Length: 561
Image (cartoon, rainbow, N blue to C red; front, top):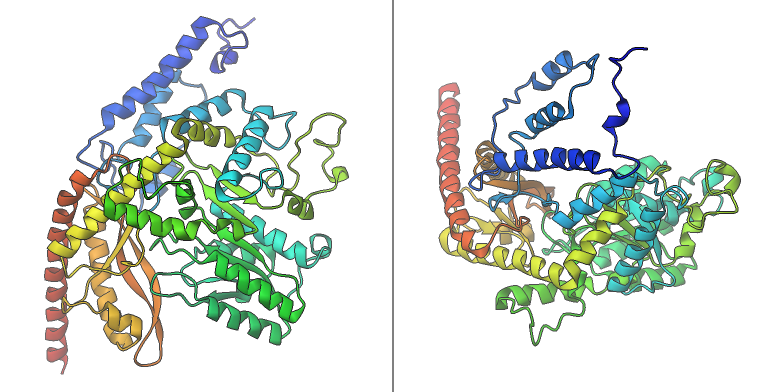
């Protein structure tokens, strides 16, 4: 007998709950938590440590990484894990980039609870805890948005992309019940705004319809869909023998916080369908980001019990006036890994009528391993995934811990900070033109102009030339690079697709803008002055560098002539 053989069962939690193994496990978790705390620096958006991610960084990693012959002690493995976390972005008050939130303690605890039993959420026989949590959160969020929890359904999936794709699967099968077996007809069309997320592109490709059959709809200045243009585009499709099957309404764009009017979209789609005697297209609300403002659906804005600052309160009410129409959608989603404050990936897909899921369900004979039994009451064979993690437990944990009021307080804080920053930007840096001023919320987009004047109204009206806009896009791209180079201090976002505008010479072009996204719970109104002061310095550097580049280019042109 080999007495040197390692007992691999020591790498697992115990089967009897003994104190020795439990304490060892807790100590190892404590090592990770303590190690991360030691890496924190509240004056930076990166954990401590330095990594030079040059052009050969990942190539060198691949060349040097091999599985060890003998395993390492777990405390040594933890040290390696902490090495991975060095120089990783972290959510201090200066973390202001895109929709990348901090995972809350209840969200993490929910994940730990799920990991401890490692159930497969496909079937309640294998994952009863996840199934129970999933049913609860579907009912909770259905009630929040105005769905009937007794009729609605849903499940956790892999982000807003997964929700959009499932919505498309439902849309196709509503039009053609044989599509799942015979294939997708080639005359189907989907519609979304020019400001929509690119997820629908992927879904059209994956469904076999093709992205050429995705029609992009014009947007207004507030990044919401032009419903008149939507009607016109749908009419054109029908006139040419096409079938409109899917409309994705964005209720909270990731660049500008634009919110499409679901009530108007629904009414238009109903009337158009009746006019032509066709099935109304399935309407999906991409509410992955903005849907969380539904927590204010029953807030008393008149009495303002949370004492929200007046300008922020006005903004919140404006958002709620649009978000309250979510129930007009046939399906929608909540990315809890966004404003739900849970770890990746914890997205929830909701459908108004659970019976719709039968359109994409499998026959029991097709799932012989699970579900085709006399036991088990919850079998999700309608999901695209087979094995599914029980991320619903993390969502459930967060909903219990925050409650409606907790989410209201957090979202109000984000809006208050954003409102304060906007006021200071207008006062201190007027050349940083806020180009989503009509969109209250947690995002501020600002754009620079080479003459330091506000050129946005002329751009939106189409009186500037393509060359003029491209020149200012180049200026803003320079600001992207300067802010990105120094992002260790403050981490901002940017976009190259804020509004497509017409040009004086008959073209259409997207505007570039820098993005300030209030997403960290540690960013308070008191930090607004420092944030704007930092931006003022970087914008001054940008103009100086831009003028130097223009001068050099002009000099070269003179030499060439």
